[in-house]
Length: 142
Image (cartoon, rainbow, N blue to C red; front, side, top):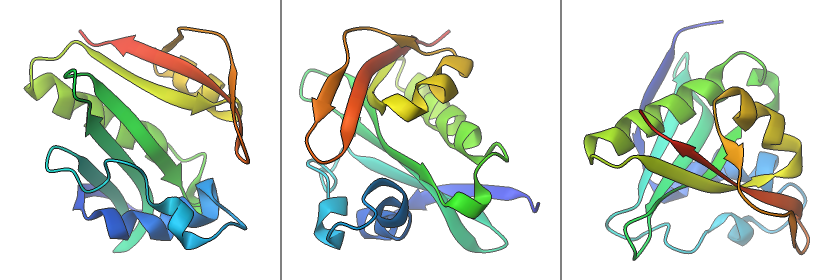
């Protein structure tokens, strides 16, 4: 595998990865998330050999909470640590704002991945219609 380069991207650029990974079989418009185009929202893309292979979004909620959203890596590039690199990059960015906590709604299938990265489940499972079971997870950053 080649070196991964992570850089800021636009919300529209995330669709190329969000759609096949998070919204497969659904309309592309389902890749547009609330707050995607807020001024405080940031999107990062992981490039390998100049190909966008992974994405993650950071939303700053109205109460100042930092939320990880839309983390996805294209299937052929999964299991090579790209997702972990994206999450760590996001965490480093949150630390720059002197914030100590980041949270997300994690798909049930992704819970083991986030547990390995030090996140904890903070609530009971809930269902997002058409997508499936999710858990609120969070991490206190040191």
